Length: 397
Ligand SMILES: [Zn+2]
Image 1 (cartoon, rainbow, N blue to C red):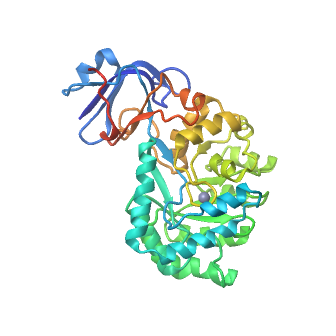
Image 2 (cartoon, protein in one colour):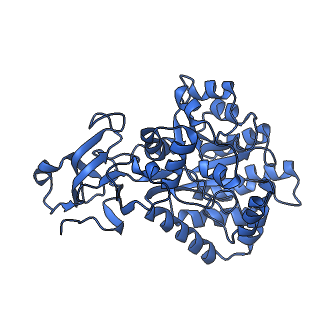
Image 3 (cartoon, rainbow, N blue to C red):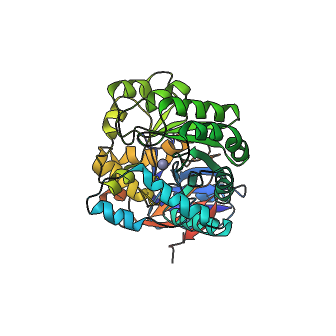
């Protein structure tokens, strides 16, 4: 059992528990039971009535739900620092860089891939990410995609089969789509919760994406989609039509795309990945336009060695606010509850009874500081399922 008291500003993401859309409680406390689930949330002064353990006092610091990073590519080998340097020297981003990582990934041992994925997952955890989705997509062969997903399973249950990341070199696109939908899917589905397709210029077109997603759904996988990152196209329309959990990137969107995402029966979240735009010096998606239209927006890191080599959700939140027109409340919500919705999870992304005991203590008076103090490491402790994973919680002495 874990009890935390003296929380100056607690973001619950449950408006019925506190003030405003984030349900903020001041001078709050949280109790997590031995099952790792939150058993009580309320005023600090009442905590003793709800726990048998000594409450740890965080000394007025802010506490927020653990971040839910719903889009990462952590299974790979090598890095692409020289490609990054070249791009910063003026060369444009092309999806083809994926093939360089593919070669390094195929050449790596399982142990090397697991070690790299674990290193990045712990880096993410230390910056407050308590739920993380991890995709395959750098193997691009039956054997290498299947082992990539076994590696992903070593770090998370939210695993996504992305055999359709790009057509590997020397392959025919139609034959590759057939392989992805057939033998590759058969070997990967047992290790996957989701299937994803990179539907964009230089990757897969709308018809190919539809074929692949339908095959995945038939095999029992949830569907999600990389859509409209590099150009306008039919990716978002396809995603909404198929009811995918999330269309990710949504950088180039038409009024019709927004209408579809905001439609009364739409169940698809728009997941924005602003560090991909940051690291490729591309225009940011217009989050304000999406939110004002009523679209459910999530924020995620897209952590990958090519276009967004960061696992920092605090940075993503800061960009959401500073560069994409989100309010501080909206960006925090999108990086927690929004991410949970993009993964169709109701047990994470908030701090209320029965949810998983995932929370982050900030060296700050409120969540506003995540954007107000960009680039500063404010995450001082991280708790997952009621266990302290990094930092310390007791500031009473
Ligand atoms: Zn991605």
